[in-house]
Length: 113
Length: 115
Image 1 (cartoon, chains in turn yellow, red):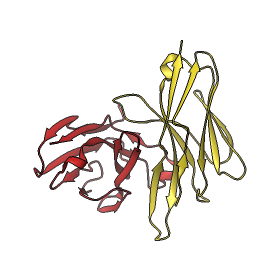
Image 2 (cartoon, rainbow over the protein chains, first blue to last red):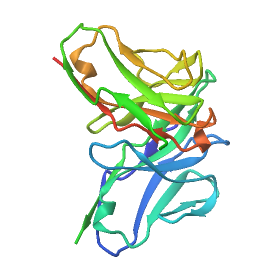
Image 3 (cartoon, rainbow over the protein chains, first blue to last red):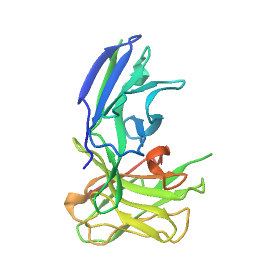
Image 4 (cartoon, chains in turn purple, orange):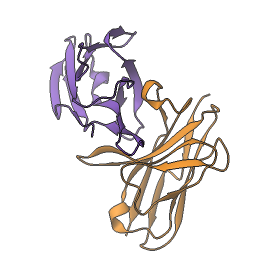
């Protein structure tokens, strides 16, 4: 049974780099790791996705070690508008061949001026 | 504009009164899903659908029903709502059933209060 673990909250200041780590010990061989951002009263919004090593896009980087049991979302030079909840998502292949998506509990990032 | 639309956005109702939350997507996506979000528990999957007429249970399906008669629509049905179903609900869609490697597009949410 896959389970993801993230820090409950993190604080940062504008202009700093923020790294949020997610643990997923039982990730399936074919699963990707996906991160979402959620603002109050809105649905989650896709940020980045990766399978292994490093992925970078215009808003974030994702680092995945060789064993894939964890991943780190890196937000460069955060601003106040990056204050949100960040979710790590992996799949969960069950013994009965069902497949469910598992969200982590989320990390509440607060960016201070 | 590509979007997932949920209705209603807010609803207050009473125990036992059947209700339906509609979800529609305009991206021709095969995969659709419902989640509920509760404080401290993050998002939990209720039901999902890999395509028309194909649905399956997520992690918390008790007390809910879904149907997928058309590709674009995926309504969530509460036949006999109870107070423990008071929550914030999200519908999502993605291109196909390879959901592990496909971004999901989420609606803006429906806040249900069951008295």
